[in-house]
Amino acid sequence: MKLWKTLLGTAFLLCLLTTLSASPVFGAEIVDTGPCGDDLTYTLDSDGLLTISGTGPMWDYERSTVNYYLYSTAPWGKSSITSLQIDPGVSAIGQYAFFGPADIDRYATKSTLSSVSLPEGLLSIGDFAFGYCDKLTS
Image 1: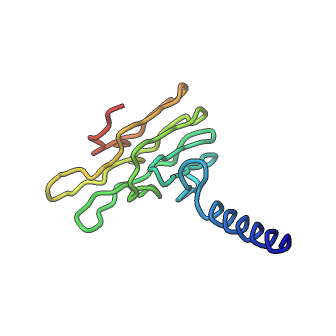
Image 2: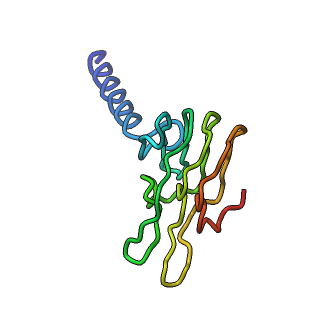
Image 3: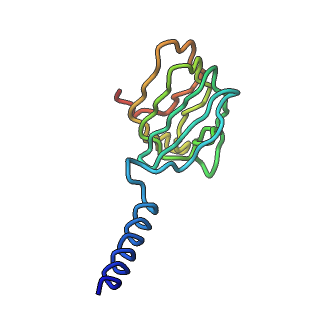
């Protein structure tokens, strides 16, 4: 009987650990990450939070047209970003970094960005960095 309880307890523990490792326990899951400057990286999570961290300026980006929509060529350009956190140490935001997306036939914005947190010490914001971001409220 004791062996049976031990086996059952072990099976339950394995199921619990498998479930916990398959889903994030604390907060959102990281869905994308990469470089966005010589010494900067970005992280995008499943809640739509984009975080820029490191030191120095961001790279400049361009706008691109895909199927009648304007997008930024930034790696997160077609993502549904709801909030942006730029950490201390970032000195410049690149041009077109968070531009669009927008429907060029109707000029209707598709941007979901509503909140931006900028650090002290930020020296410049590039041209059209927040173009078509008309849902920004804070």
